[in-house]
Image (tube, rainbow, N blue to C red; front, top):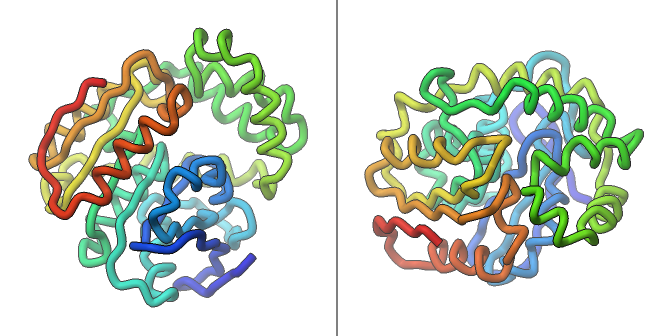
Length: 278
């Protein structure tokens, strides 16, 4: 479990596989190890995944955790590992961090996949219903102490009702997976959310010049799919991959096919614009 000094804080990270480096950035309150179920489908890359500040085994400093800080953490991690330019795949809040990383440190990013994310900026984003945000905070804060209750709250935010009904095994799998993850303290939720709501990349998105793929499920209640179209409208060269009948965890119904499309984009020698509906 290596830890490295990345800027002013210590970041816990892991490296898996061989090939071109791919930085994986996880979302709200989740440690980097939450990527583990997807790593076999990304085995053609050298995957670098890490705990954002406040999560897992990384440092948990006082104060608000801003998206800008976390993007700099990611950039500092790459510098500390001696990686000059990488491909990036961020999901949910990790997609916001990925946007900020390529905007603040464009020389470090070759390509970026923005999964189930938003551009920030208040009125420039389509926000979830207020009760959805309240449930997210409630569920993530109690996840370490009462995983059963946490899943009752969080599963409807992450999956469609039909997916949960037709995949009753998913609950046991999630409990097993979460039991293997390092716990994140509940105070991280407030510190991170304060930074998340202040995030705004909307006006700067046209500055992104690298190849971009935007991926989103069209039934996402946590980060509505309209945000994918908003980002696409701001990044001329981006390609859009909307997955029908899928919630926030867009890869869940068919990981091999969906991750296969993302791998194809990441492995392509040159990015080009393409709208994919299914």
